[in-house]
Structure formats: C-alpha cells, structure tokens
Image (cartoon, rainbow, N blue to C red):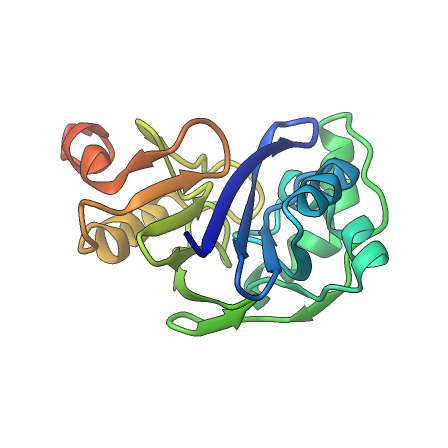
Length: 211
C-alpha cells in the first residue's frame, strides 16, 4: 500500500496527531500536532518519511502545541484556515487559562478555503470547511479517510463553549456538509477512537435526530 496513515496521541490533552504519508515520494504531512514534536519526528524517521507540510483542523492551542518545534526542525510550512488565525495568535493565553504552558507561537504560512484540494506529500487532501467548534474549523478528506478534528467524535460532537464556538453553526456544518458524504468514510477525530460516518449517522444523537 502506497499511503500511510498513522495516529499518535500528542500533548497534554492527548490530541490525535495524524501522519499521512506516501511511500512512493517518501514524504508526509502532519495534521494537528498537539505537542511531543520529538515523538512525531521519531515516528517519521522510523517510517522513512520527510515532513513537507503541517496542517491544523482548527486553531485551539491543544492542536498546535507541537507546530513551532516541527517548523524549527524541518522548515515545513504551517497551514490553517484564516478564520482561526486569532486562535493561533492567542494560543499561549488560552493555554494559560487551562493552567498549561505553551511554547513559541507558530508562523502561519498560508490559509486554505472550502473545497480547495491540497496537493501535499504526494497526497490530495480536500478541505471541507465545518465551522462551529471554531470559525475556521475544517475537515480533510484523503481518499476514504476523513480527518474531522473536533468537529465530530465517536458518539458526540465538538464543544462550542470555547473561544469562537457556535453550536447552531456546528449543527449546520454537520448536517449540511458531512451527512451527505458516504457512509463508508473512516472518520478520525481530534480525540478518542476512530469511527465511520455511517456509524455516526445511525448512532450519534447529534446526527440521527435523537437530540
């Protein structure tokens, strides 16, 4: 199999960092490095993959805690939706509210927009803008995999009482953007276990009309 998809729990809040790699090119993109940059770099070295890009599903501090060190070590650019720039800029302040430290603020290379296809590391990732958890929250589709960040969890959805959250907007994103996608898609949240979109359509009370 040419493509590699691995998940590492990173940072103090155990964020699922996604490593998406391509064996043919020997390259990889990392999504949501919540911390533990050395752990991520060691895994990339083990897989013989060179990091080319760092992406974030949204800008909350726990999802970007490892970005600056990865940038310093690899010079890989960091991309995030422009609407979440304020969260990146305020990451240290938000972390302090949780009693957690935060290192250097990452340097944002460029933003992306809904529907954009990112050709990175020999892969094609389609950006699906799903605001609600944050204004600039996105999901990334790569083949049959859907990296959903904190938009959707197994059996639940992202909280909306954090900076930039909007419950009605999140529901609109879920029902308007994700429910129309194929049941077979494998969903990889920012925390907790992976699931399938079909399973969530059937059993998740935020999606099946139970709530």
